[in-house]
Every structure is written in C-alpha cells, then in structure tokens.
Image 1 (cartoon, helix red, strand yellow):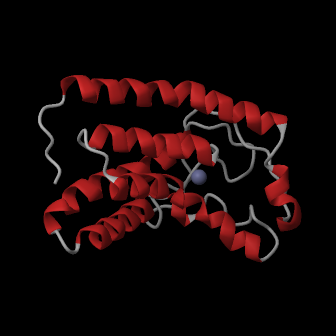
Image 2 (tube, helix red, strand yellow):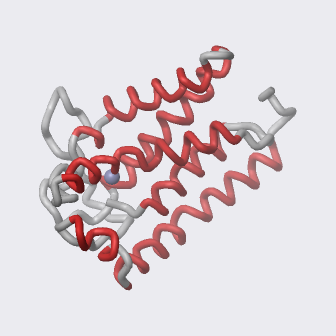
Image 3 (cartoon, rainbow, N blue to C red):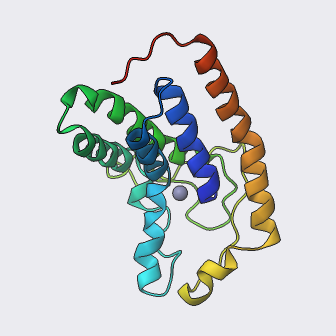
Length: 185
Ligand SMILES: [Zn+2]
C-alpha cells in the first residue's frame, strides 16, 4: 500500500487534470475522499483487533471504485444532473488512481497486489515495477496507528511526494497556461 498522503496526491492530480480553473470544493473533496476510500478495509479488521486482516480485499477492485464513485457523483449532482459526468469522471478516476498506486507499490504482505477484477476473479494483480515503498505497520489494532509513524514510512511518504507532486504542479501550470474560458458554473 502507498500512504494516505500518496493516495491523496493521486486524487489531487485527478482533480487538477479534470476540472476548470475555478476552485470546485465538492469535486476536490470527493477526489481526495475517493482516492483513499479503498483503504477503508483497514477499518473492517481494526474492529476485530487485526487491521491488516481484510486489507486489499474487495474495496481494491475496479467494480468497487466504479460503484463508489458513481454513488458519490449521483449524490453530488442530484440537484444538477448536468454535473454528474464531471463528478463521475473525477471520483472514479480518483478511485482508480488508488488501485494504480497500490499495484505499483512494494507489497510484502500476502496476498500481494490487488484483486482488480473481483467479483469476476479472485486473482491478485501487481506490477513488477515498484514505484512506491511499502508502509510498515503493526498487526494489532492497539499499536496500529502509532506504528505508522516511523522513519521507513516517513521516507516512503517523501518518495511519494517526490514522484507525484511534480505531476500535480505541472498539470496545474498547464491548465492555467492553456485552458480556455471557465466551463463550470
Ligand atoms: Zn490501498
């Protein structure tokens, strides 16, 4: 898994690429939320004292991020359905960025990778090019949060920022430089 910071940078990248010049708080909030949502599976295990138990389960699938993003887009646009497409693209792509980052991350805990095609297949996919570093974390809930704060994870976050933030800045600059009139209302 990449860190929540790396994932939110992925959501920020999607938001930056997918919206106009005007700041759109709802789209930005949704992009950040859906970029980390698949890791909600930590919560399932956290409740029973084993936060890693269900990690990289069904929430790390194409079906889940598409359904979750679609639901989010519908909730955000039910007063103005013309906005549905914009929300849908940003929310679903933010979820997909999570899956993409995770399969490009070193994974030392089985099952390795993510079940992208669940429920049609339980096969786990991982890319042998490891862009991001894994996060060290405790196996029991009582030490889990505290265990995330260590030098190894700190360097992993630095690496994520180093790799993704420049893309966000370049995308932001290109949008300011080349995008035409504001299209969002
Ligand atoms: Zn994840």
